[in-house]
Image (cartoon, rainbow, N blue to C red; front, side, top):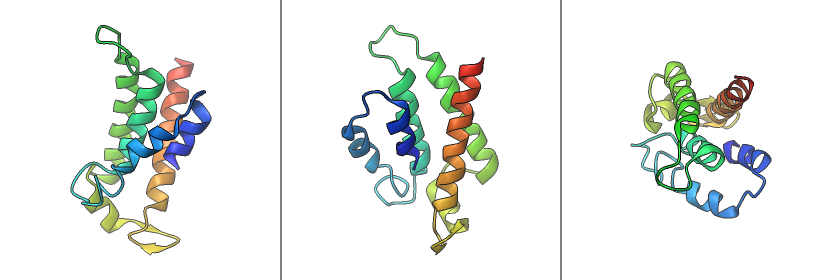
Length: 119
């Protein structure tokens, strides 16, 4: 769902972004020991929108946006690590379903992008 946002926001959304982000699913390759995949996907989208293209370019806008998303995410879930979030997740598919985590996190990303655009 988060990458679907990328498809809507990026003029030249490349399927390679989908390929790149797939390694983040399940806390990096399904290990559940690392960063929640939805945060990885959000960082990829923000980087594609506002990341630097060369070494000396300013990247503060993108950093500010993804930092806001990450802080809201950690405030809501208590961590950015996959396993404890997934252990508590409930969704239409039952325990361990990240559907609601993805939905809520996607909304956090959209809100952060809208707030930044309004500033």
